[in-house]
Image (cartoon, rainbow over all chains, first blue to last red):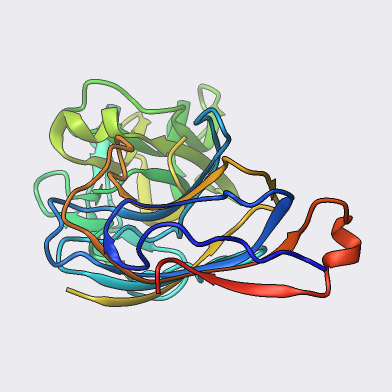
Length: 248
Length: 69
């Protein structure tokens, strides 16, 4: 018959609590339960179970995805195939924000004219916020992998190339994080006078916002630029930014 | 302060004499031990296969192992 494993050490006490296998034969762990009380913890912690070989080498270290803070308590069950449900964002699902730009009757001409986001909405204010300075921008305040999509419509009457783009930058404008997203571009030849309307279809760009990006000014931002000759008009545009995962 | 009910995965490992199972509190960033955390109600549930017997011969006997009742 199978042998009962000897019990070593207390069932309760200050962490760490070690259980050493002393019985000959083999032991297959099916599950472990422990209650953690962090009332006296010196800081935030993970409630972990560590399995070590005879020489002390770590064979496995497992813990739930949630870290605990000082004062927290937790009942933790460790078993094969278990995984805690991921916490939902405050708005439910993925965090996203969108902004719209107003129409411009007459473009001032030149390159990189930042357009104001005149309205911004989000389902998670901890990730996105509205920077109402000029130009008004959409602030990104948390690391992550972001998907930026947008559309714009331009009405041009003079020759030259035009482009409109939505882009993400560091907070100090010093560098562009990732490639800029050209949403639409076209070129007029000299002498054309007819009004041309161009509208982006389905353009999207992925941006990785890491800790280094955020450290520069505490945030990154999304803005709308257009570079075109004068007498170009812009109809209202829109951009949608979605946090689709963790930063890499 | 929050009271949490949490689940965590556990790998399939066949352990022999001298191996240890430790319930710990570690810093999420450094992995260093965090002091002041009290652990209670520790229970380890598993299967023991004694010497001379295979795991299959002993698999029908499962014990609840508690530390120092």
